[in-house]
Image (cartoon, rainbow, N blue to C red):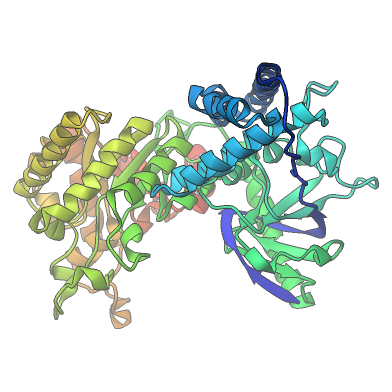
Length: 559
């Protein structure tokens, strides 16, 4: 057994035979031409044909996956129609007297290099897109098969390798695709009845190829680099799209374990088919919004795959915990914006930096504390180090122009803390207005209720914010005075304690008195033994791990 570690871009498990997709040769001959104008006309005609192909591909994707997932190909069409792109190609034809194919390839390389050199990982991922659309134009110019098929589907480079539309093997067997890379247009055309998943040497979680894989529900792993080996063709493999692990020629123990996991996943999928799109509503008509918790942008795929209605808790501190230096505004904007775009109109509630206590980061240079759970953490760091806080708030505001983002403040104990945070938020808004940067002016602000002080002050806090979300993990430890990191206190730290449940009840009642909604984003939200209690208390929203969404919806709908 050979084990390879790549980057997980789309969750799921695939077990099957490997089909290695040979790299397509895009060698283009450089020819001198006598009539630049005629060559420019060739380019324009090929570009128009490519734009028409992309329109057809866009319509196919929209029909199968929805309008928001088809927007990628609108962006591809805009790339081809960009005056700067055309000017670059035509300039090369006119100045160097070269053929259109060579000019298109040269222009693609220039634009791809420009994107790759940008600080933004989202923009870096666009390098693959400009190469993809340029290859489409080159195919038209070279007369390669890359046009609308009789069945109405658009046939791309992958068709020449036999992996889409007509299947990937004459015997009809499904395969796991191994490739150097896959273009977004090829990924969109994969025949899901024939492809179990894919593994690529190149690529990133931010690429449009990765986003399409998540949309299509195909397990996918990128970035295996030099571990990519064409000799794996025909071998059995297991890919774990959650961990990013690839097992070539797996041993019997590995096969048995992954077959078990796959069976569990298929049982979950059966529940998904039954409940997907159904409202989270009791038999008596009580409606509850069912969201999911995530820690990093790639987790958004699991939210959609499990049909959650939104993201109730994006733990933004993981953007800090997984780095060795401060995450820049641009880095954070990319992360938040990626999730916002992927979620479309669904709410994305992002908790501001919650560092401290059990989440320590060296570059914060926090002093040692005897009792860090009661110490310098979360909103206390943000309010005393506003230069850190404002970077995050600016990134959140900028990302709010791309989706339905809300901001949630952790570890609140007083009204003044909320007002101070809102003041810094207003400063960030003012700066962005001055820089003419778009953002959602009416972005919602909420607070986490996770201290007894915030419960006692809930009426006053409700007048300052748009929503409450109860963090039951910390609320339990602070209410019961039990350190949740101390295993010897487990018998005393009972989240079912009447004291904790009464705190939850008081919070919900205060929220409703002031006309705002109240949810739960702690682990208790997924405790099915308490679902009846939460419904009786009038909870408006529950945010749980993505895999807990459907079992919880099932219980609520049968209540």
